[in-house]
Amino acid sequence: MDEMPAIKPGWNAVLTRTYSFYAQHFGAFLKMAFLPGLIAWLFRYAYSIAFRHAVLSGWLDRSSISNLPLMAALGLTEGGMYWIISSFFFAAVASRVLSEPAEDSNPLTDAFSAARSRIRAVLKVAILAWVLFYVGRTVSAIALAELLGRSSLMHNFWAATIIFSIPLLLIAGLLSRLGLVIPALMAQPGIAFSQALKQSMALTEGWEPYFMTFLAKSAVIGFLGYWGANFLLGQLWFRGLLTRATYPWAQTLLYIGIATALESPLFISFSVLYRDLQTPAETVLTASAIG
Image 1 (cartoon, one colour):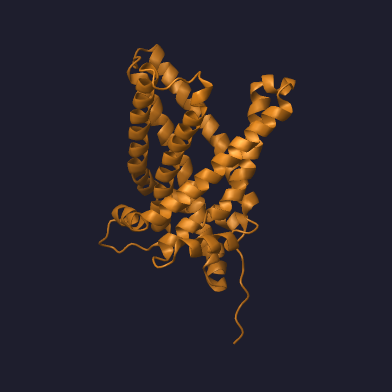
Image 2: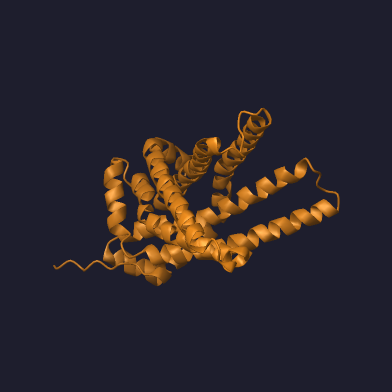
């Protein structure tokens, strides 16, 4: 009997299964986001204290040109830490999506255990993706500043935001080619990082526009979420429910909560795409029909 030709999943099918899975397991993903969110919050808190102490003690002078390399190194390190935390969260999400937990198992514990078992490879993905993004972001920002430095558009907040966001979206679209590395690591315990990287590059060909659209949509939702969070915080401040000491804490918690809520669907979508691209044609057709 002739084998059925491979059928690639479409945008609508992947998007539908992404949000269907997210809605069905929303509580589990919310609990799952607590640990990386807490780690990110603790890191942000410790980093801000250390940075402020370095400035006040005179060790770090932000106005000195000689400190620019150090400031760049600190920015690279700070951003890299957040990418590592997000990648670990991504690994846990991918493990949850791609595995079928036993009845007597704890899905959350199993997901993080699987992520820890591939922590070295996950670190490689995080560092590679962050360095590429950091370099691309820096180069594009410098190029746009040189090109449009004297333009009136640079004095308009919304115009400048859109102009500088477009290259970031393009860079993120290119980096989406790495998006199936972590699902591959979680689904295939014996696969090497280099093999997972090659597999991801091959499978994601042509999917850059999908993830660029996904990220653009998430950015709009995120903007509305942060605006709503700031409005809520402002109302609590005016009513005296927040103080100068508690306001930054509440703001950080809300911001991290919004970020993790936005990351979950993206990570689920990468995992769903990986699962669908690894699934025989008959199963893909059945899953598409079920929705």
